[in-house]
Image 1: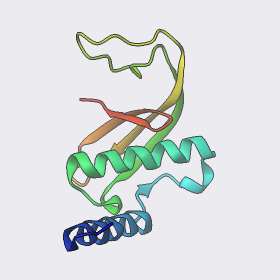
Image 2: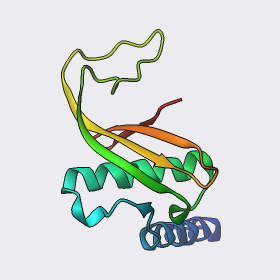
Image 3: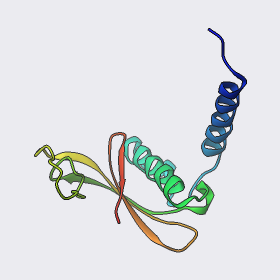
Length: 117
């Protein structure tokens, strides 16, 4: 299989982004005091905010992270016209503040994370 130089540039770029994201830490609550599930939810929420608001991890302050049982698979944020499994869905509500001082709320469950608008 022959790989083009563009492929290698893409891989190198992703490696740089991944290493930068892993080394930078959000400010705010002490992540070490959280249980594993809450820590994972916070990390996923920070990743989403970094992407959505074009900010670095260190520009995000974690205000709170709480375990929540969402009433369905919409994670408390149903979209019009969509259907959701009617099952209790365990997850987290994570509140963050970006460098713009905008308070953001992210609802998570497993690998899913949704930014509340």
